[in-house]
Image (cartoon, rainbow, N blue to C red; front, side, top):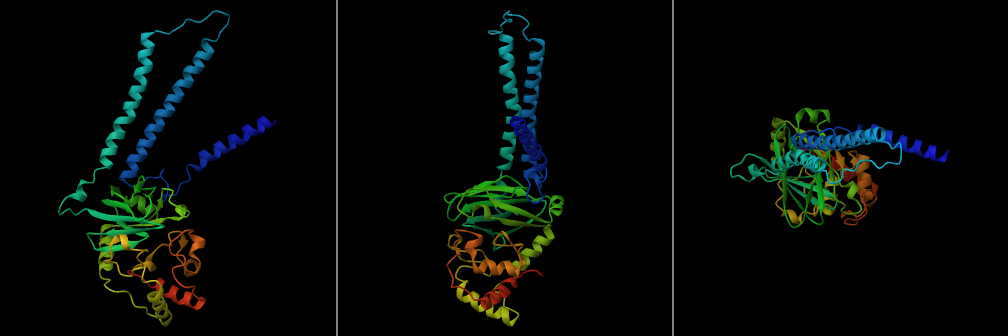
Length: 352
């Protein structure tokens, strides 16, 4: 009875795993590809799975045929097949063919996905974004547009976007699961690749994809999220123009927000910039750029974008991201100061 109960439990878990594997969200699931890179990689996944399942099926069919047709009825030794050149050739050639069937499209896709030549050509109109990973946040610099943002990556749809990846501290890994595979960000060298964001799939995902750090980098590795906002080319150009118009920090428009701006200038501005054209060298930027903080979709990458969550984050950042470099960098704030600082930060908007 115990053995039967054990197998029932295993069967239930197997069925649940199969069912839940199809429950991925369009903004996060690798099984719901949302771009050319993701489509190519998904096709390779299907091909390799098909080959493996095919091998298993063939082996099982042969096994049962042999089990039924050639089961022993007496003590005679069956005819031995060692030294059969025909069989040796068959079971040598078949694995080679299967390997070629998988290797040829894989190698072809690898070279295609590694082609970043357009971003390296002079006078190229390719969109290039420099990604810099930090403990535990992301910075996105648009060198051709003279813009720096933090945490929210904004990209146009239906065109290739090229990335330069590097890290400020330890090894991280840049990953937008629904759009393409991960690539490490190292401290000593720049990795390059491209992604393409399909407009129809982006609309299905609410024009917002989730990005992750896919490299174990510290206690808040699992909380090192970022978001990718997708726009059509016209809206993207409009966003760029609006960002470039910000030449100086936004001025608070209420008395409470003005108090918050004073607190910010005393306690926060040494780490956080509030203008997108940041001239500070990339390696010297200590915290995310907050120019468009009020437009973001999340706080610290993981909290809801609400005043209450912002206050909680400012009150005890260590509680939400253990090991973050913001903890202990400013004096403890009173509830009145938190209200004022929250009012100022939530008002940092570039587009209404």
